[in-house]
Each structure stands twice: as C-alpha cells, then as structure tokens.
Image 1 (tube, one colour):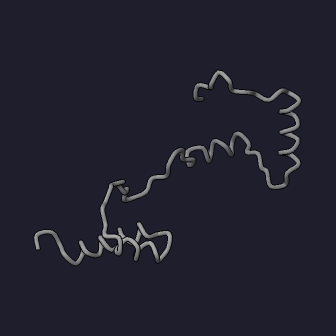
Image 2 (image 1 turned 120 degrees about the horizontal axis):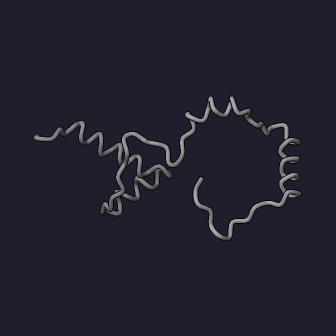
Length: 96
C-alpha cells in the first residue's frame, strides 16, 4: 500500500457502517469473495494502458491553411495528420 499523506482522513466506525449499508443496499454493487478476487487480481492493470505503437509527443510547425483544414474536419485532427504522414511514408519509401 502506498504511503499515506499525514492529512489522510479515515471514516469513523459509524461512517464506515453507513457506507457499507449503502453499498449493500445498491443492487448494482457487488462484493467479490476472496476466491473471486484472487482469480481476477492478475488481470487488473494499473496506470496508463499500453498502446502499441506508442506515439511520441513532438512540436511540429505546419502551415496555417493545412492545419485549419485538418482541424475543420473534427476533433481527431491529430490522428488524421498521423494517418496522412503514414500514407506518405508508404507511398515514398526511404531511399527514393
């Protein structure tokens, strides 16, 4: 367990009882048994999920009109620029 901050607050026994009562009253809440927890524990991932291939953050200067056209087509404009660059690399292999 990670080291807790000095100002970490813990619920009182009464608060904990009310929290647990609320959990048990919720039909969508589900408590895992120790055996169920052991079965799924190895499948749980922490942190940022791995994405392959990993993209690298860079600074790139583009002409205003080129950028405006990519942005005008929607929120995923960065992905479309990446796709266009990949297509260029496919059509123009290194060494040509």
